[in-house]
View 1 (cartoon, rainbow, N blue to C red):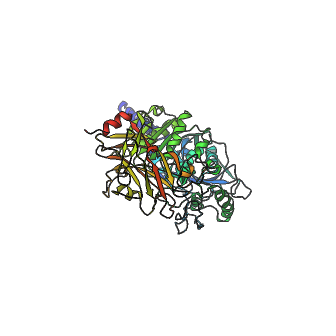
View 2 (tube, one colour; view 1 turned 45 degrees about the vertical axis):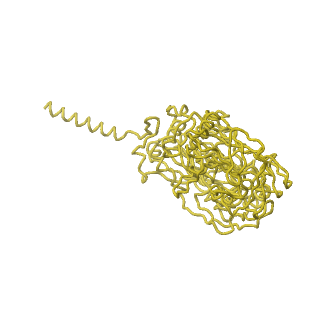
View 3 (cartoon, helix red, strand yellow; view 1 turned 90 degrees about the horizontal axis):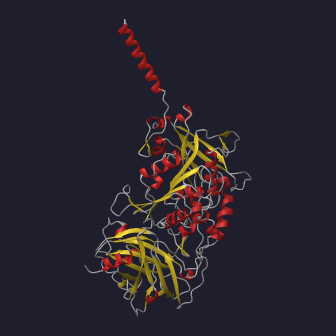
Length: 611
């Protein structure tokens, strides 16, 4: 009798324990400072997905009503069944609803004389794609299982969002600000684009992080510059932080790599997928007035139009923790975009780290880095991420998820070393630490028909000047900004100026890494020798001095190579392409290159000595 009673009690205990365990609520789980995948959050078929519209504070489509942004939400079912509140990973984009086709005439014709207007281009119509309620599936598999809600929105004038694209205008900062304010209970959301039924984000903790790549990486920075409450952390990946720096360089009209002839109005047409009935207003007010009057393809000068689309100018209110990611060989959105924002963030004492890799456009930090960042700033877990190394750089032969940590970027152990030119540049002149005397002048002839790659490999050429160091007997680590100071005269009132820093001998293997050949590059307009905000025609034959930074880099040049400075005029991958024949004469004694060398002059001298 006692045995039966005892057995019954044990069964009752097991049943009760099992029932209690099954009723245990699902919550985020953290190990080693990172949010872990939770099985209860990892069933896509159970996720709640819905869309809504958030009201903004602006009207940019001219209909007299405040624009509403289309927003979609993906969240675990426990946010309803268990009243679970979670932080939000938010991604916004102008690309979610499709883009224009690359039809002929979409891009500007770049084959014309400098200072002359190009022929008008075509303006395609974008056919909107996508169905509600799903705006995008990006990031949901990565973050929802780890205990986050993922929110997407289409930026103004794209998809089912009201308004007009402005490509860096104020509304593209205020739109994500409004969405974040809705996530924190401070803005209104509606179930329909034009309805009055309100919807709230009752499942949000009020802590938001943003990420994205390229334009989608620009928007997190744009939102952060508003200082909006609730945006705790951002991870911009290859963001465009200044449309001037994207479409111009030191006063020069310069295209992003791979998109020769693109400009800000081209990008406007490319993304304008919003309401067809309201596109004409945006075309007239934004593209054909504001952009046409401000972009200035004739001089390439920095002006108020470009200043209004430069997020560096708007950073004062920013407080969101910043993990920046970029590729040193991103010749589309060039690495200066991240460098300049990271530098300012440090000045403002914003928590900031930077991750650089050696590849091209895109490339997020390792998932572990992103996870630690969001875990700390969104979930509030004390994982010490704020004390991690400030800079993480993927070395030339390492995998992207195996970066090397450094105290900061640029490397604090780097200092500038000035190199001077010895004549012979039509074949191969020299780069030396000691300044030579009586080197005279050398002249190159512009001809865009020769690519920079071809010119760097040529044994001799009238179309470029090439100056090389001695063969390195030791590796040389460059970290930071190289700077070119060039004194030149042009045979015409306008000329392109292109500078490449390359590693020779050139690796011609078809599988060669870009770091085997290209160190960094830069472009400038000699007409802007005084200021990049104002240009003046050159007096043919008169010498001018222009000084400008090349793109930031961190690269180890291996022993056995030579560091080479190549000066030429039109770069057929990036610049306008005038008729060949313009002559640029370089005063060698007033021209120099400053390199950021880890270990400084002592290290470079040692590497340039014959072993």
